Length: 241
Image (tube, rainbow, N blue to C red):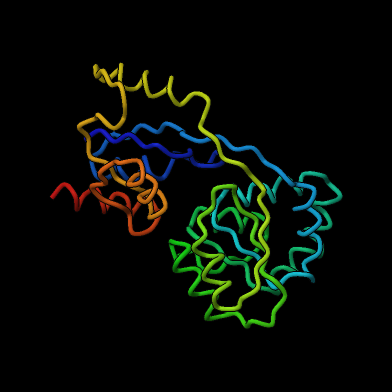
């Protein structure tokens, strides 16, 4: 079966995208087309907060892009050396919460020790945080995107866990999305006027994607329990039974 992956490619040069690799192991030929582009913002403010760990009770990362913003703040040699010599250890004395294995791997590359990589969703991670944290701690620091879901902030607020958010990247449609989609379907000898008219089955990588697809009127055949390649392949296999 041909699978069109509308997602961001794997960060770095460490081999093929895990979704393509996992789907291939199940006999599916996958093509990846990026759908989003990102603009990083407020990096000076982010840098200031990163180098003042004493003002926060811990860190929360729910996307690889937020970790990339942190990495950009460490590009200057003097900042990078200060981070390695002292600042990262001060953060590691606190809790560093993450959603997903991809985000956890990037956090480890910063020298930080992530918690919660197997939670899979913001809903589950929020329960972990609420169970672990007191209400009298300094605020947890949550660098995030402009279109983040409010599930985690709402859950923490309702349970009295202090939180400080900072938008560090803005999300927009990838400038080449329409061209890449036309090229893909032209190669498949298909003519389409709208994705909504395709007689395809749609699978969602996680609940956020599923909610967004449903809101656009798309019928979602299956959704991965967690945003990982393994869970997506399992969901597709189950839907095809």
